[in-house]
Amino acid sequence: MEKAREIIYFKNYFFDFFDKQSEKVKSKIDQVLFVITVADRIPKKFFDHMTGTDGLYEVRIEFGSNIFRVFCCFDKGNIVVLFNGFQKKTQKTPQSEIDRALRIKKEYFDEKLINIRHENKRKNK
Image (cartoon, rainbow, N blue to C red; front, side, top):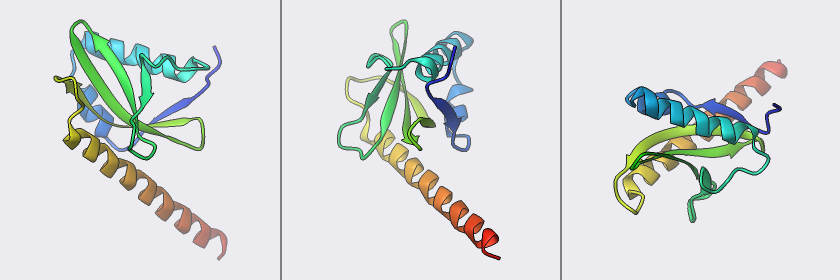
């Protein structure tokens, strides 16, 4: 099966969340991430844009009566960069989790820009 997207993990934010989950929840998360990598069009059930967040998306995982979310963004079109995850306990996504994801997203792109600048300096020497 050919990949439509690549998933990368920025620092340990995703794994800090993932490692705390039960084996069954981890398996469900892995299944949803697999769908994201291979589906031409990702079902909204598993993946959706967060309105008003400047390019922030959420991976949606349901296991039994539990709901989990993992924030992410796209980079270079087909790369999905995973950030923080949490268990959703209310209908509304907590603003503190959205704010944290936006800080991590900014950190990701800031570090990427710094790395590009360093690379360009090395090439120009």
